[in-house]
Image (cartoon, rainbow, N blue to C red):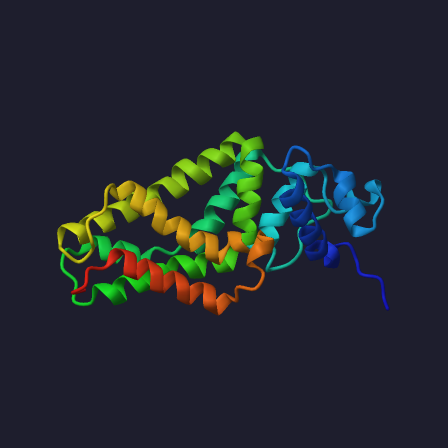
Length: 232
């Protein structure tokens, strides 16, 4: 079998780096760890990337299709910190579709609140299923990278929770949803119910028998039962 050129091994390097970063976190990951995962010497890894910062960038660039038109010059140069954060922001923004939720918040009356809520649940569920490894990597690395933490939590997740809370408040006031003690907490309950079954259960050994189909159907069933009134 012909030996692959460094350019053609970039996806393999990115996949190995993702696994190590997710396991160890950003600060504790060493270039030697990723090299060992690939069966390379530490020096050989520098054929592909100039630094750990470049390796971290490579993981997201590969996942988001940055090199779709062709591989970059190697070794991949060390990016500025803001370049990596911007890459992650742009990639997750493309994946984080909120069309159904935004449309729901924009209207006060709804003909079929059950279908609307199911659509919002599925919109979130689909996103988590698509990109949960990247989200896991971001959450694992955020404690070591304050700029990334600010982008992910303050500019990403918190506005989403605010939007969900507004949606729940509108539907409670309209009589479509059961009253809740606190809409902010209810929004977190809704988001975490979806994210746990679409994403976090995958790392839980006691959940290995739960199929993807059963997880999705159960979330839809229980969340709609929890929020919708009997007449909705």
